[in-house]
Length: 222
Image: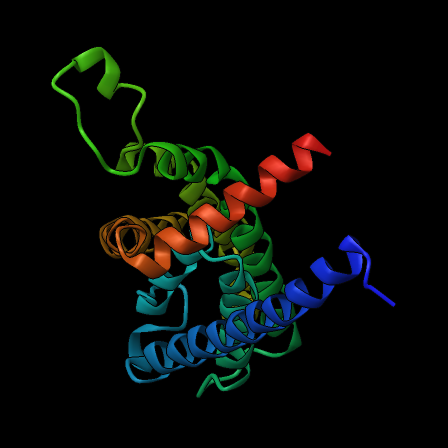
């Protein structure tokens, strides 16, 4: 008996879907491993109220790769567990969930930028008015803000209570939030933003962007 058109499409699509799942899983694992490595190697500056966690540059990757949401979450979770001076369950759970929520927010907020890239690429026109509609790094500023704001407002608040519980004051909490906002801004915008714009120009980055745009258009059509 001849297969129906739907069955034939499923036969073709399923292996492709499985391959996408495998690629996504591998990407998540690699990002998690890299996050852990970049956190633990310079561990002297990756923890505490005065920190500069270089691995947070990877939290920009969800703007391009959905798999990075899981990757940075697992990386942060395991990095907090492996903290040479562990701060307990609150840091492990709250810190990791903050990274997860921020990563998801970045992915969602970066959708207009991805759609622009999928449609226009990185081309430039001699017409200035036309260039205003083309994607630029400025389109990523707002999508990357959750990495700064959520970490400052969540992690920055609880760190003083975990590290100096006997000397917590409003000023100390405010200073902790401010320092974390500053360090996150340096890493996310100083390292992460150039990283994500560079990756968006690669074949792998554009493939991920176009696949998500195609999925978005399919859902709108449905």
